[in-house]
Image (cartoon, rainbow, N blue to C red; front, side):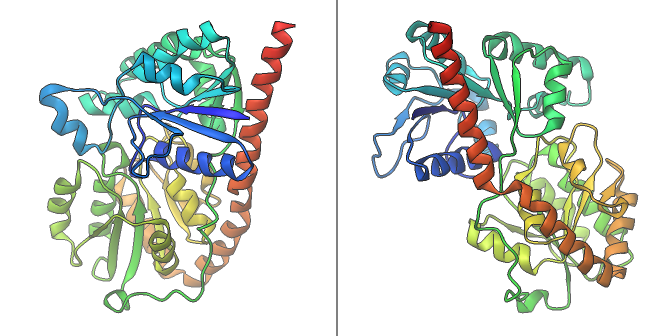
Length: 382
């Protein structure tokens, strides 16, 4: 197949959608498919399969947008037509300007296309402080539906949770529940040892963008409330606009927070020497970072937020805490510090549980969705 992926936000691997897109590209290419990418990204090696459109200019808000580590695409009809020319199917990953600009051209050329739901309305409303207002989130759900998703017959939903949210908000297209998957790079490695500076510390990892809805601040509060705060070492793997604020909040901790941005090899190593993974995020469609951790056998403690699909990865009560409650998170952290043997047993459970998220199975399911879109279009023409 010749496939074009359309992604308004694509480039550095500092957000889940970009990571998902890159792994999808690699997986499809490994299966012999030709893959084009339409985005703001310009390949440094000049790969002709990357079609580049300009980035949007937000004027005085440019600095804020850049701090969020994203570049939003601006439509360019000539580039769009070149990227879509002669392909068998198009996969639209985000509900923003570039993606919407593709629609009339897709209909004009009669090209089958699928969509994905990777952006929760709360990821948008959090920037104006309205993430907890249901009416504001509903308005965004309705806007996404009216401008993109009502025009498609197929929506890739990374979790059943977000599939049900789409149903609830009137999204009529067929939902394909397919995990974004965990790369082969992530696996248990018994040979990894803690760095000398952390030898006597209980290392807690959270991997994710430094943004408000991820709730790094809550984990800092919980660590301060822990009976074992003197031995806790927090490691925040990521980048984002809230870094300076989190550094200030972390100054009260006995051990300074480690702020790091890691490639896959280093992240796998870090996961393997850590003692616990905490995922306090209020809003999450899936959370690849949590899946990567549990695939390596790192036991998690996850927020039970109703806006987060990640809560379903909690296999036991002790793997879950009350959303937004630092006291409860501190209790769960202390529990796992005090029960190392149970943690070891649960670690093995998570390794077995995570097999279902193997990237190969997920890519194969994505291919089936693309093939269905192509076959349905042929039937329609007949």
